[in-house]
Length: 403
Image (cartoon, rainbow, N blue to C red; front, side, top):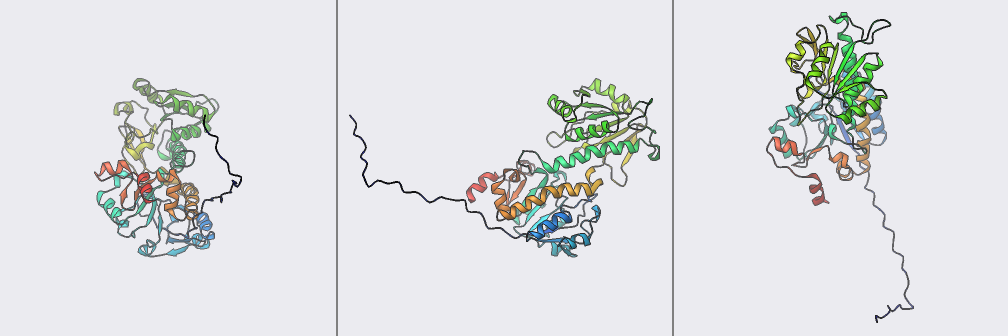
């Protein structure tokens, strides 16, 4: 028989002190916004409204002279918001945090200071091994804002730019169907007694969805192709109407292209490259005067006849079909695009200050960690490390060893 536990009459419960989380000390940030010199980049990463919020929260913001002029934000707008206007680029790059709307350029790497934080997009084709090595040696913390995830697991900046690209694609097509731009003279939506234009959209992602919304809103007839049944179902649910959908089957695609007035390429890249699904022969059978808008041109394009064009010279003709293949479509509506980027970045910057700096934010937020590709001398993005045959370090493990 087991003994009963002995309880002393002097036994008493002693309450323990409550342990509360120690909040990190808020940090005052010094943010620099350079003027973009990259080809066709008109956007700016923070608008004057966002700068005003940051300045009113005790942060210092420096803006390079004419940094926002491509989006019709002027130096006077930024100075009234509390920013300091700087005329010397080297002086601007003394800021602890640099925020850019274009990827880091080769000439900017030399200006970066050791242990700086750089928030910008990343463009794999222009990334060079020498640039990476210099960034590694300077122990830069580099965050690709197009890889940042929000709390719902989506990429907010990519989604915003995709919405802009989808809407812009249809408005651009309507413009080039017009006689003023040597088009065939077709009104996209038609009128009573005259049928509307036929719009074919390849890809049922966010770009495809917003292109379909814009085309249907203007009264066009819309047909959508994609290899994902789920994406096509989601698109129809999101636009709250049934429309022609089909898997990417070459015979059906060729038949529908032959009668299309507008074809929009909006396929997602596979391993960084967009698959070519429309052949040269398919384009040659399209109607003379029809318009191709290849939104996928950023990653190679999904039309075999596509080649990169510019905002200054946006179109070319092949087989009498007008091709519009401008990368970075969002830069053509730079003020809207700048506001979209700024709406995402400003709260992130504010959060990082509340958490004692960008390191605290990276530690606390998995969505921010997803965008980090360089961290204090280590490459934390596996595809980049593999491409340049450099050592990859898992960021979670790196942070665990530092904590």
